[in-house]
Image 1 (cartoon, rainbow, N blue to C red):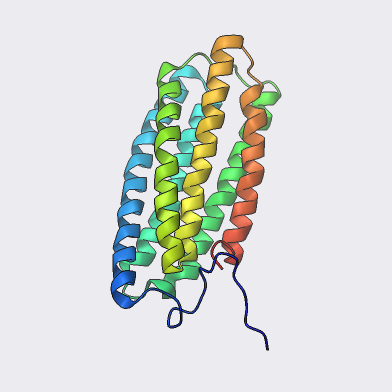
Image 2: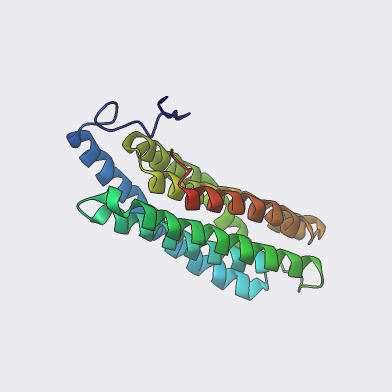
Length: 217
């Protein structure tokens, strides 16, 4: 019987090619640190985005804030996994939580995008929202890359899946920033919901991968 293959070599048997116990401990601590940073930032992001969105009547900003809440749930699942003595034993449960968070995000973004396209209340200019989207666009790629790199070396599908949730926030930040700018500069209220629907489709794919455990192996 032929040996299974793995494109990014992250699912190789630990005893053959994976990191030793000391290195695994370092990587686990590093992932916990990245997860803690992600949770802290997203809590702040959620409060600012939802507040600014409510003031500006912006469904995009409110949706972005709710996405941050979902990201906190995803990161919390990974934090729970790596808080135990045997993180691998909790991997599948953490992946299911992450998958559900992707599906919830896709559902919300889709509904709000359709509502915005067909008669939703037009959002007013939001300087706070534009600054928040720009800051998130600068910060999130680094958090995503760092967690994904550590997760792949450790062979943790849940850490890689959570890093993709963070990367999705980068895409949403770009969509939000472009949407807010186009709305403020040209009055193109339809630009944001159209782009958000594309993000929703990506979220569904990532959710399916997480549910099946395909993010790493």
